Length: 73
Image (cartoon, rainbow, N blue to C red; front, side, top):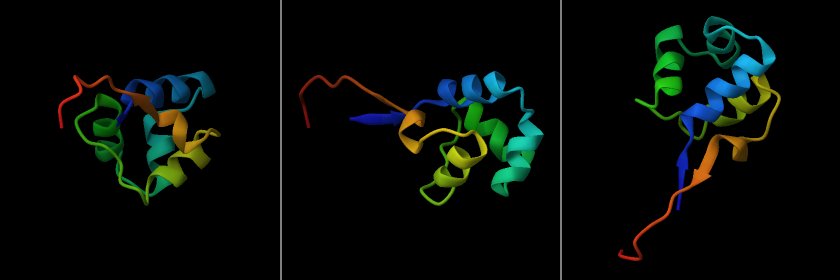
């Protein structure tokens, strides 16, 4: 199973030297919404993910990480 890795989002943004405001504008979201993405309090939907990848010059897959499960459904 995969989950949105908000730490990857922040790490990539800081690698590029971009502000949260810059990325928020580039993806057409408010600063507050983008901030919540980075804090892991809210995950971007499928429509926002390609815009994030474009703004941060990476792949959508880079925003996800594998989560171990205990084998129960």
